Length: 221
Image 1 (cartoon, rainbow, N blue to C red):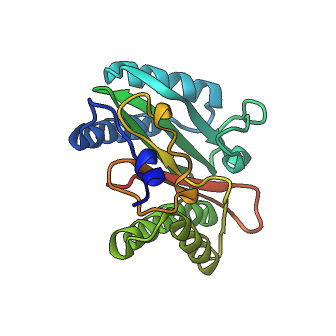
Image 2: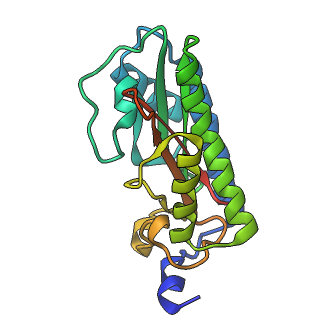
C-alpha cells in the first residue's frame, strides 16, 4: 500500500477492531428497535425523535452524524440533501434509517430499508439494496479489489439486477472518534485495498421508474 493510502487508513491510539464491531452491533440494535416503533401515520420528524430516544436508552456516547430517517420519495435523497417536507408514512410505503453513533469511543454506522404494507415493488426494492450490498461485500472478501473497482462492480451488478446505483454515495471511513481527522475520503475513490474495520460500504439504489429508492450500509469487517 502506498504511503498516501496508509495515511488514509490511519487510526488513533484507542482504536480496536473489536470495539468497532461492538459499535456496529449496538448501532444495528438501535436501527432494529427504531424500525419496530415506526408505523403508518407517523411523520419523519416523529421518527427522528424516536431515534434519539432509543439511542439514549442504549447508552450512546454521542451521535457523530445526524440520524436520517427518510419516508417515501425522500428515500431518493442523498445524505447531504434535506428531506422534502415532513411526510406521513403511508399504509403501503417505504422508508430507511441511517445512523452514525459513538459507542465506547468508536463509530458505528448502519442503515437499512423497511416497508409498510404489501407493495411487491417496494419490498423488492428494499431487498435489492441488501442483496446488492451482500454481493459487493462478497466481492471485497474474495477479490480484495480497491475501492474504485468495488464501486464499479456495484454499479454493474445493480444494472444487472434492474436498479440504478446512486454513485454520489460511495462509502467512507470510520474509526475511533473522530474519524474525520484521518481524512480517509470516500471508499469509492480509494485506490488501495480497503482494510477490515475501517470502511463503511454504502449502497443506495433508485427504482428505475417509480419515485423511491432504498439504502443499506454496514462496516466492512
